[in-house]
Amino acid sequence: MAQTRREFLKKTAALSAASYAGVNLPYERIGVAGAADVESWHKGSCRLCGAGCRVELGVKSGKAVALRGIKDARTNFGYVCMKGMLFYKCMDHPDRLTKPLYREKKTDAFREITWDQALDIAASKFADVVKKDGNDAVGYYGSGQALTEETYLFQKIFRGGLQTNNVEGNPRLCMASAVGGYLTSFGADEPIGGYADIEQAHCFFLIGSNLAEAHPVIFRRLMRRKLDNKDTVKFINADPRFSQTSRIADLHLQFDPGTDLGLLNAMANVIIEENLHDEKFINDYVSFKQGKGDSVDFEAYKKFVADYTPEKAARVCRGNITPEMIRTTARWFATSKGTMSLWTMGINQRKQGVWANNLIHNLHILTGQLMKPGADSLSMTGQPNACGGVREGGGLCHILPGHRLVAKEPLRNQVEDAWGIPKGRIPPKPGLHTMAMFSAVNEGKLKALWVNCTSPVQSLPNTNLYTKGMQREDVFIVCTDIFPTRTTEVANLVMPTAFHFEKTGVYGCTERRSQITVKAVDAPKGAMPEVWIVREWAKKLAQKMNDPVISQCIAPFEGLEPDYDLPKAIWDEYTQKLTRGRDSDLTGATYKVLEQMADGV
Image (tube, rainbow, N blue to C red; front, side, top):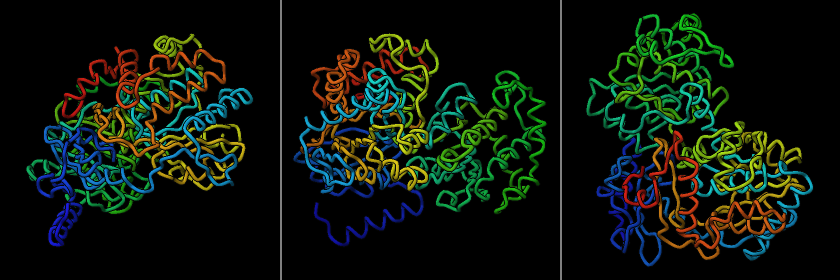
């Protein structure tokens, strides 16, 4: 839609002001370029972060031309941030991959090939590696941006078909710390509460998160809660940097990087020393353990944190930290009617990340700031499907679908029964975690790697080291993606995929909410949904390996069209057979129900 220069400048100014203040303006306030030309609106989820904002894509003549928030969605209430509002523009970008590309040697130039050739090459290479070097010489590296159906089908073929648990994803580099923290503190993964606690919280404790820029729509809810209750709601921001989030904080704890464990233990010290802990909650619900799970009593824990005085922590944390700031933070945290902690990569994407998660949970456990309105210990996810697709769906080397552990035989047997494959088909040993996987690539032990919807060459730590491994000529690398990336530069085979709203599937956001996006527009000619790619590859793989079990893995999905029926069948198998009776039971979240709910289930 044409705009005058004045209209353009007004919108730019509004967006700039919103960004500076951490505000997200509703669709009606700023408009959407091209909105007047929209012929139809299609519901789905934003894919830019883990917030789970629900949006509608505006379509005209089969093309995406606009995007707006869904007013009835309880995640974002119609609001969208600038990143989300504009992501649809990459759908028609001229750099989109549209043809399979192949080269035998990584020093050669890519040449275009047909889809049949691409799938045949991928099947031949993986089959040859397994025959020559064994099942654990192959692996899959996925993403928290892949749909649940995609992650599920990939790991079904790799575990049940190729008999390897070398199934990993980029959430290992971040959310694995949150997983470890929830499991060791509460006995189960994923948050206890949800976003609805924001409007009932009386104290916000943010640490390791610039929520205003990383999760703007969620920050808007916190900001509104604070601004509407300036005198009664406290906002604490603990961060080595002064960020946009810090601007509305009552207290900004600016510690030196890497010293936050001392800060958190010092808060626990104050809570106990000033008798601010919830003794009844502790007696009724809490057990204390240390090290590898050795049981201790509350007195032992008190003795441990006694060494972390506010004075000592202030000396260690440095920055602007004073003993009185630590005491004030601990008092606000403990005495609030409801305290909500939120954090992201500053806590999770680091060494000792599990411990950092544990210490935040400890504060909530000590004070009874759990299981009541406005009280939650909430790790925000950075990707739209790190929770649903990877953590719940079995996208890491040690877990199976439905929060099952690979190492437990009865749980493996449950998955094998659901898949109709022989018991013992899934190996009992967890596979290689992300860093071990790429170390194995470096050493030439992992000979064939499939990378989907992520770019480890750009996102791994110490990228120069691991890039050299991926450049090895004896390592075959497949990439499925929408754009050329640094990782496609070291690949042998690149297959173009459909993007968001060009395919159908489910995301599971931070607060355990599953949300569907139904295909609204066609992908560029030549790009295909990953579920179709995996199914067709597995068919060829079964033939080349003469393995009927691989055929059995994809038998329920034979002949289904890939735009809706195929992902629906995959979702149904996963939810009905593998989440029933589990802590992540999704049996009621059918496609029909998900499509009816404005904000998912």
